[in-house]
Length: 448
Image (cartoon, rainbow, N blue to C red):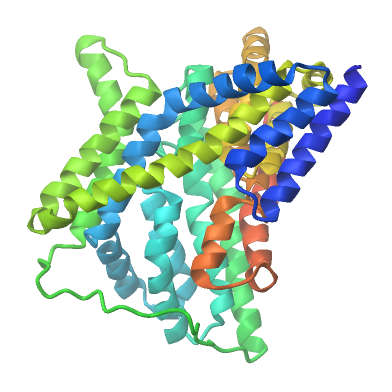
């Protein structure tokens, strides 16, 4: 029975991945695939759907909705007030189109590290990147790779203290902080960041050597965002809120604990940090008060689809956990050759790839395996911070397979096909991070 159930898990995962790639919405796709797993596991369909699936989905929403909601509102306010674009334009003017890749990647890194949703970053950066690549006379099809590398990469998983959800989820399982695993974070930035950037620059040189040039996007309508009514310091309204969010997330909890002994968990800290970022952005753009309500409304609406997509993937994982075949998977992961860090890296990578979601795949893996890993870490004397960092790093690899929602959004916004631009996205945000996370976990595990 366990082998049949294990086959059902594999079929359910493959079906989920294939149909998501074909454009099926995960909100209805995930429960159907979960029912396939339940049937082949000999589990009641009603119990699976109304019980385990809904409980897993609801618990995820209960835990993370405030972060998704406030993050979406924060990003939308930064976008609609022009704060994010003003900061991006200032950086472009500083760097120049001569360094086209850096002029696109650096604003993406800064915005995502400041807590802005990568989906918002895509919409903000593409028009700017379009103008940069046109000025540099580079093929427009190279632009999605640069945006993906900056927005979907190391600021999401590797750079310590990032307020992105992929760095916060492990803290709830391991009792750690967003700054967890600092030495490993630094190593990951080097191992993942440098090869990715070098690859993008190599692609630029290759394009120039082949005599390729910029070709306009017929669907893209450029808008003049220069607004003379904005104050000269307007770009600071893009930078200051980012700094406030990062400092409030990483420094404020320590100050509060040292002053009166009150300790904030990661969920509470990110809520406070995002609220402060929103307030600062609103105050710095008070002259645009007429758009505040619409920005908050749009952010609230966007947060619902974002969290539901991930929560449905988690619900699927909740059904997988209760069928007999999952015992075989758990035992295989825990008894894998190498350390528990390598075991965790493999498990999170595979589930992130299967669900097409970094946070969804990681949540499924940690929900099932984190208690065991934490127990084993205590026996081995391993600092849980390294389990946190490996989980975060590994979530940002196979998640960007072709069916990933962020990848599909990026290609749609840039009007490029998978054939034209996915190779660069795959190498910089999938292949290099996967290899990097596995190598780091393997090498670090040797010193346990």
